[in-house]
Length: 580
Image (spheres, rainbow, N blue to C red):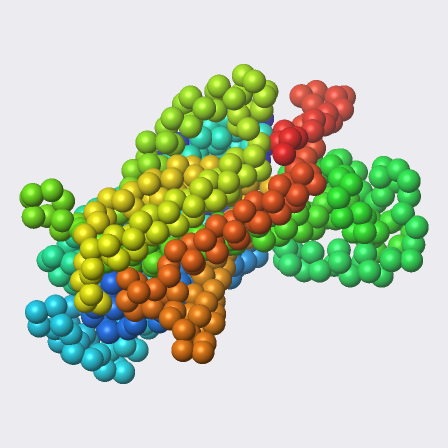
């Protein structure tokens, strides 16, 4: 479609007309998107970072219950995007799905602000001691939280994917720009998180919870206004006529029906449409891979109603991503500690900084994750990638799975450091003779900084690598659904942590024993739990290396019409990562 200055990937404008490459997309459009992401992250982390403190101090929940409820809510926020992505890819497209969902998200924030501000909707507190919350107050608070989670289901998978859609994969210059998009997208995301954990958390604990929630609510409304100002600049992907789930189901059903047929020795003998079909339809043809060979039976020509090699490859891509997804659950479980046990751990330590009398909120330490990322992302993009590119020849510097693997390895180190710091905290507790359950251990909260900073540096490889991997490897027309592999992994990690905390608490209490994760962390064994997570992380890293070694990256055939009528269509293999 580029003959008249249109994009080559078939993008359209809001009215369905071919998008002009010079007037739409690229950073010209993304400038309006990154502002929303920063404010949305500020809103989310403004709630999530200090939620465990609100539940224990304002609603009177115990440690295990508060950790479980925070994890269940966070898990819901990250899992609901599965539905939002499906609706976007199958019915309404990313822009309209995001539009409707963003209003639901804002409604949740408004209700949450009301829940902590209006006297009849919150428990009465005096001298930092709150009365027991009524059933209706608890119900309203959690209803507001889960309305926010429903809204996130449509915004999270579509806004980052919509941003990536602004770059034409078939234009080498734009494809290179897209390589930096996810790095800077996460930069803006964590900038919003930094504001939340440094500023909003302090406001919540020292000015008021109502003010602390009203600020991000106002900010996200403002960011939506900016987002819609950029509407004329946006490119849109046409919604596929066929449901992705239905197509994948057909591949599985056909492969099973042809299970007794013999596969041809040459993949070229499998069923595939003429290249001209893909050229006219503006779609991408996929190259055959040797993974999941049993699915190739769906493309046997002698079978009834055979699928194409491209359709089979799309199913293979989804299965390959699913295997990688399984290995993301443990790292996401480790990260779930940031808003739960890391915060509770910090509340037991000395939070006074120097002689200034300033008392650092425990949840504010998560800002150092953000600071580490904000420093590391530009260094990664400007120095590490060019350095490695010269040595590997890979445009990304290292492959996507190598990037993720480095991040996973860092989580083993994070849990080791967390274990060592907790051992020292318990040693100081015993040596100084702290007796009161609520008494502060005379050890600076800044001892927790290394585990937070290591998480931030690791996430430059881990989180950004996963987001880019699942977008890049998704079949055409399923990028929103592919991005939910990233978000649902975080959600499943939170649910897994909720399950682990509950099971560990019950098992260690059995027979009158002391819980590893009791209300009084000074007389618990959080160090044992961190050692358990370290062992899981090491085992998971080994599993990831095994999966990554066998993974075959997506390879596309790009079909281009010749400039002259007598010319022939040319095909070039798409540039995917070839190395693990």
